[in-house]
Each structure stands twice: as structure tokens, then as C-alpha cells.
Length: 292
Image (tube, rainbow, N blue to C red; front, side, top):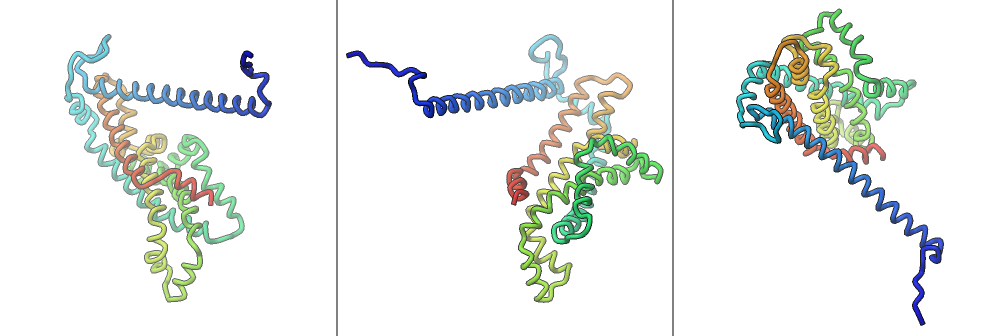
């Protein structure tokens, strides 16, 4: 008696639909990995081409340059005055991080602990600089800065960058503050703690991870902020990303390898700060806290 091999049509409907779902799930996973791999290969190719060009003497129609050298980095450092540019960049980033923390954390505490008329409208106003394209409010903002005498200076660049970073700190800190039991603050006040001591001895230790997360993300965001820094910066207040833009598009003939060397310096600087931020910040933790 010959064995009968079951066909797909003879399988029960539940088993057939289950196998189809598993096959669809595997196809979806393969497609996601394929797209991710394609993206990573392209990204690695672009970065590798820039790094290779910055280290090559000549690179024409060949897989690799004719020789290797580091002189383009010295040329970029002197041609683009990177000592002054990096100094201005770190001054802007440091001031923005400090001021955004001093303004944003108390504002976030007030938004998390107080209910008042128009609170949702205020939250919407905080969201606007993060949702609206930067150039939309960047041009009128820098126009005002030039009218009051801050345009083209470090103070103007710092003030312009505070517009999107302070709301960012507020929105990141609100979930961290809301998870702290208000009874802890009430108990501290019962034992005689004033507002300053309450913040320093009770809230600050509990909010330290959130504050660190917000400020490190502000640091990385400010380092890569181009539009506002470009519109508000002057000759002595250019940040690294603005100087890179001028190096690419300004008039005159510059060696391509020198511009690529400056791009590598910018990438390395941003990557170092990003790795430091990710060392202290877990993006999934922020999302999880905001859902509570």
C-alpha cells in the first residue's frame, strides 16, 4: 500500500495559514536585513572614500591612491584655521549645554509639577522649534539678532542655538521628573528643606541620569547644527560644520584632499562626542520612561 503525501491543499486551514504567516515573517525579516545591509555598505563606502582621499597623494582612475600621506591634514589645519574654528565650536557647544541645562531643567520641573491654564499650548510652543524646519524660523531669528547687535558674534550663535535646544531639554526631562514621587519632595519640605536644598540634595541625585542624557544629546545636536550657526555666525564665530561648508563652496581652488581631511576631522569629532553620549544615554530607556 503506497503512502499518500499530503499536499498544501489537503492541510487544515489553520496549519496552512500558520505556515503562510511564518513564511511571510521570514520574508519580511530578510527584506529588512537586506535594506539595512545595503544602507550600511553604502555608508561605509562613502566614509571610506572620504578617508582614503584624505590620506592619498593622488587618486585618479584606480581602486587605491598612488601613495599615502598625512600632509593634507596639516594643510587643512592651516588653510581653514582649525585652531580658531575648534575653539569657537567648543565655546558655543559648552555655553549652549550649560545654558540649556540651567533654563530647561527648572522649566521642565514647572511643566511636570504644575497645572495651569494654557499648559498644552505652552507644550505645543516648545514642540514647534523641533517640528518646524530650522530654516523657517532661522532667517527671522537671525534678522532680529543682527538688529540687536548680536549677529555675527559668538553670543549670537549661542542665542540662536538655544532656541531648539532648550525645548529639547524640557521635553526630555519631563518624563524623568514625572516618575519621581512627589511625596519625597513633600517629606523633604516637612523636615525644613528649602527650594535650593530640595533640588541639590533630593532632586539632583535622582535626576542626574536624565540631566546627563539631555545635556549630552544637546551637545551632539549643537555640534551638528548647521542652519542656525551658519546664519548667525561671523568670521570669528564659525563652528566646525560652518567652516566645512565654506571650505566646500567658497570661492577659490582648494585641494580636494584637504577638504576631505577637514571632513574627516569633523566626523571624528562628532563621533567621539556621540560615543560619549551613548556611553551614558540609552535611547530605548528614554522612550520607555516617556511611555510611563
